[in-house]
Length: 411
Image (tube, rainbow, N blue to C red; front, side, top):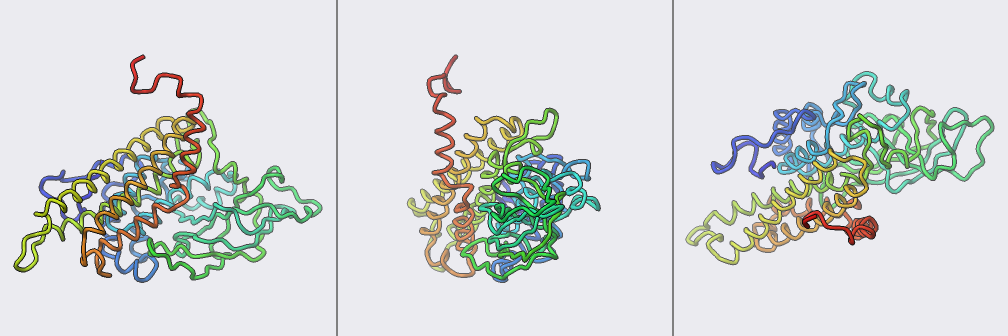
């Protein structure tokens, strides 16, 4: 498990290096990306976009190619590696981690396109940055000869300013199918995912969120763009698990298997950032007074929040390991969704406690605590981390399981 010390300067009591991120991501490059993101974090929050140098560092770390199929030069990496790297980068700049994680995830989704469509995205190399807006579907896709006519507007497209392609989910238009139209799949699919070049997308500067401001999650618009069949597939095919013996977990997994944990990894890094900054304040004595950490009440805040943050790290570590080991198991998906949603709530509680106990320091607009507080709340509010949806899925899976021995019971 990666600790929450800074990559630049680790405390003496901590390991000299973080846990390896494995073969899927370049460990040294991930650390360099984290450092670069940390140096530019305040500017990203102010400017509502990442610095170009940070984007370059993320590409060099291997985020774009992480889930890309090997036949295109990608790594088909694992979920655990990405969760670990995302949390590390988020400990310096949550916005950079969020974009990097999504660029990786969208490569996994694009791998469900027809092979010729994949070739168009990755034929010249696996480091293509892909933005996406998949949930909820928006706009409209109308079948026409050879493909689709797409138009509409989509919100919250993270990292779109730096992306070369955009995946957009759209419901099928109710208009009659034109004569000769032969879409590559059943037209009755409720919604389709279509890959559109960034040059054919209009970006609207709409992202003024409370947190994760540096993600530049602006709205995009498409006006009557033709998308050939080779760059389209049903949304259900992108989101569902696909059993493919011998294939990597990323090739087989559903969107829900580790999706919540990947989003939660950014919140974990943001919470670590809040804890680190808060602890510096608590251990620094003001002029003529003892440090705040001498107060037993402040000590309880530190112990409880740090314990909750470390507990979340363990939960996400388990999610990543189980997703890599059993990518198509419904049991694993249900438990992982539960764990990610519960973890998000724990992080919000931990950071809220730190913020309230941080006094004026935590509320200052230059404080890392308030920025991390905003970022944690924003990341944890993502739909993939909603506890009610995760609880429903977990209860539905477990309905017929509770009469059997539990994993911790003797058999």
